[in-house]
Length: 434
Ligand code: GDP
Image (spheres, rainbow, N blue to C red):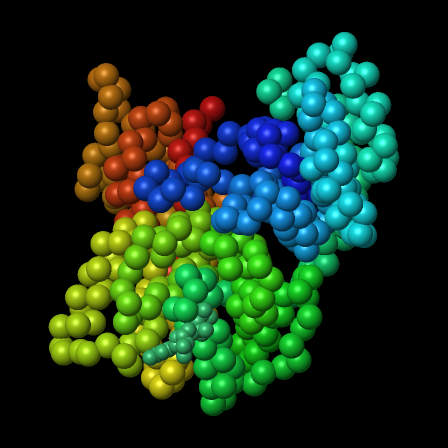
């Protein structure tokens, strides 16, 4: 998917514009931790074109001086984006900080579209003419607070999207990534996987920008480890900031079928572990929880069980995710990982037979009657699978509002009991039958 980044000095309205473009995206699940709040990265759509958008202003670069921060945000946009929206404030005119941003953007080949915000009515349009002097061509008048002019701005941005998004890898290849906070051992684990016996590593493909993916084959199955860049190539100032590494992780998740959430068995689970995992779940990816550094844990026969309970308690929304305990350092059980990835990926892409699905739903209804509300009972007519990756089901009913969350859960459990689906989220939507 093409990536748009919004840059500009503080207070020009970046996050307002970001939120306008992203729109009200209703999260499908309710119990996912706060990844939707405070968003700096999201998918969005304009005229049937899907893209991702980054609000670089949301990436705080801690205590760097103001001008340095602005500069780093612009550099980050140049690294990450296919198109940059350079946002300014029409009411305040061009400031020194705008010129600073412009100076950095002159160096990039990435197309830049200039937006002049806070043009809330047609009479104010003449304010945009000054902005030609920034040297990025036609300034687009917009009003974030009134939602005006965004269409023209996005049209212009979309004109610069890369022509054909090259299909990076074939459908037969399983793409997976490792996410987790710094030092849980992601890089060590990648190296351990690549160093496994019977794993054949092929050419390392230089892919999107500076990401370096690893291609490998085991037991005739091809895999690509999507590089959570920064994992191998560390250094740039902003890479050490949490939000930036989150951003990188989100982009890796996006390109993956299966996401390995890596935890540090020695240090235990902390709140930060939850954030990106929540995003992977929301994005509908297959998920495996990996507990690394298990060599460093003093164990008795209960230790693993206890840790597992902690994981389940902490990641309740990932009840479908298998847990693998291993050590990247001693390589213990590293060889068990790829088969688990393969199974999760198969389940993620599984299609079930409609008649079998409906038998299961009808049995479920017979066992546990549908809920009623104000004397009205939910009626289920039939169900069908409408998508894979993740498996998604539509249940046709008399009134969708009668489908209570807990009943939906019950149906999900029944579907899981019947088909497995280990490692993958599944989605159920209630639709009115007309
Ligand atoms: P990343 O930031 O998640 O990529 O983590 P690294 O792979 O750089 O590892 C961080 C630190 O943990 C390094 O000092 C590793 O040697 C250490 N480490 C990684 N895996 C293991 C493991 O399985 N056991 C132990 N004891 N240490 C590990």
